[in-house]
Length: 116
Image 1 (cartoon, rainbow, N blue to C red):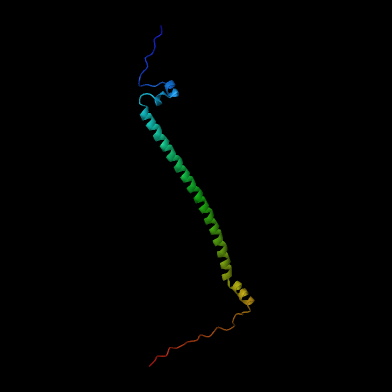
Image 2: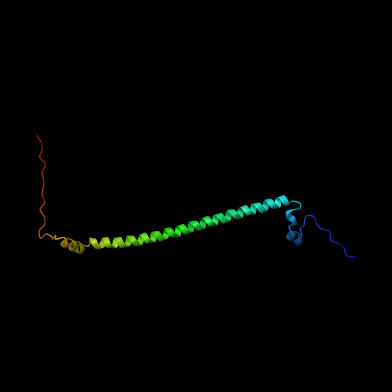
């Protein structure tokens, strides 16, 4: 007759693992604690990745806004520089019927009188 192999009480076979016997026999409490610990870690990992994804979206929106503001600033700065040019300013003033002086203006000095 064929000899039967004696089963090691501490060793588990693949069949025992597939059947899930390790969840109900022997030191099942420590296995369940480990499974619970792994589930908590996975939930923490998932939630932190969601938070990071939200931050990435927020950062990209802020970058788009900053680029829009930079473009707006460049446009307004360009208009301001154009308005500061003397020839443009002169054209605007002439349209309001103001003309440049041929002579320099006189400086008026006001002297303070001491009260006695």
